[in-house]
Length: 64
Image (cartoon, rainbow, N blue to C red; front, top):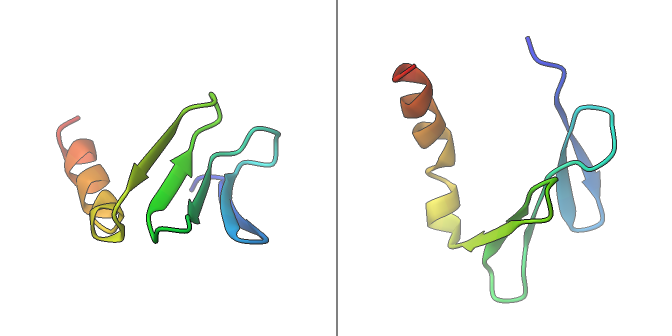
């Protein structure tokens, strides 16, 4: 079991481990999902694309 959890702050959801620099996700003014990582990078995508992320992660993990 991992130690990560979701923390909500205003309109952002943080993917936390209890330390600083947590990645975040939010919906911007255009209805796009914006994911910011803890290295200063960000990606913007349609909600329908973001909803595919859990399936993509499952497939990636199966290839290990």
